[in-house]
Image 1 (cartoon, helix red, strand yellow):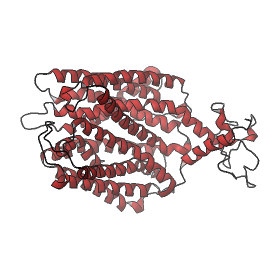
Image 2 (cartoon, rainbow, N blue to C red):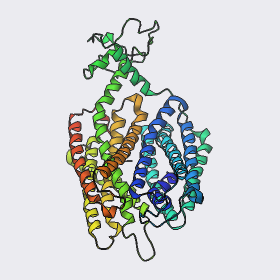
Image 3 (cartoon, helix red, strand yellow):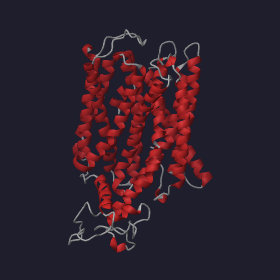
Image 4 (tube, rainbow, N blue to C red):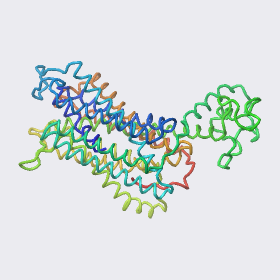
Length: 510
């Protein structure tokens, strides 16, 4: 995390200052990179479960990320890999990067994104596999997420400071060195790890349910429990008969002639599935509306994050007579306030909630609080930006801290809430994919934020190349409206949703 956060935090500044990329275009690339980093964990999880196992996926992904960071370092060290420098005025006199220079830069970003995404959540799964009790796993998760935020804080301050005040070569070089050291330590401990053998992708069984139900679409649905296949390991967790919701899927477990071998196993895997597999797919369908409502929980944050660096570049970043805050370091405020929010949630808010309500907050309640705080953050961002644009002299960059504080505290609510909800509600066969579902959400949100910025650029004049000539505050007010509508959608989904395992809910901030 230290090696990756060091260059991600300052990517926009690097592209504007060293590659003469326009401000909004740099923000778009930033969102795409973050989207890739959060989409690739799904691919890594599937490969780990199906073929290679966690250990192989982690070291291969780490090596790919290291290659990308080294290539990024080379773009800062070799003059021919960058266009000629110019002042950050947006003038047409600034030379644009050649196709070759951009191809090298994008190749470095692609390799780094692929590697970081491939190992990010797979590392979490492998770490949890080293422990046998839920208590030990909970302790591991706490320390893992703490190390993630701590690394982000160090990278967004110390390494970004080196990049801005020493040189990009030294800053990116430190990122590469941190990645190489982490990979070496991981490989050195390989013989001490507990390795879990891959058992095949759980998604295959879900696809089989769809195919089998379509093939048997003309079959009559039975009410007799003996007409449905449970498999050879009926542990009593599956209902005697399929549930009545999404009844068309029940046909996948309906036994037909020739579906079962003489030993009781499935003879035609794409014609017959177990009752458990059918119910697993139904569970995912039920939770999908809640999952989809969280996409617009992350999209405004993605837009806010990318525009915040552009705002910081235009503001007074002096802190005393001898120190200037790097623009990329402003993002560290989010990680800092997430930590503060987690402490407050664990030590104050949750106990008070339990005292007043008689029970701790449910995952859906925590996510709902996160929605409200995100909307409030967009409103504060709009007010601050409107004031910044009208100010006669550059405002202090510290005026951006309140909106980041609200976002951080909001994440301290909705992120643990989503982790608890998906881990609790996901089928047993898909427990390892619960965190990947969150990563997928974040990835889609960043890609959608890129699309929203593009649409705003095309349809309005709010986001010109120089944000001082635009109306960024209008963008934030638009996000407030979108957030309110999405919150309404979330409330409908939350009210209609029925927990499967409410009695097992234990929401622990990570």
